[in-house]
Length: 112
Length: 115
Image 1: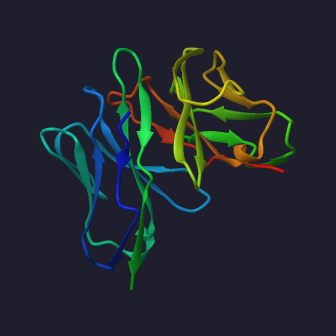
Image 2 (image 1 turned 180 degrees about the horizontal axis):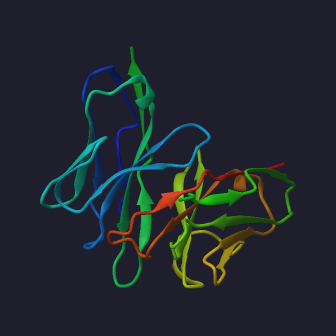
């Protein structure tokens, strides 16, 4: 199974827009792409989910190209409280086999 | 609406012992999945249960097992503990199984330390 890859870390400043990209070459045909936020000693928290094109909610946007082999999480105007690890999740497999696969996480540090 | 609840939150076990972790899903969710999180391997899928049947399984040895009850609550068991089993074990629940649009929601996890 191909790996789901994302940058290890990113730095930003308050008020800036942050874009985190995840590559998932082997995503299952009917699966969605989901992004989570995780703070230390807590479970991952759902941010946004999509299948194709663009999805937007009150906290983020998700951009997915037509081939669905990557996705970009966009956080508008980040604040210090957005400092966390961000994970993408896709399902891999076919023919009845389904393995939810997380990226290794992107540690985002937001500076004042 | 209560979230996914996991017990215990923290536990310490000795090598060779076995451990059982519990998970109560969000009300109405019938699928429960388990994940192991370590600094070295990241978040890895263990298995998923729906309607008391294991539907999907990750690449873990047979020492890791689970079950689901008729009320959708789930337990996972690790036998013959090894030092490398020290990890955060996360339970997640969703309405259906196999993803394809089912959003999974995580609990806070159970921290297992093997000494």
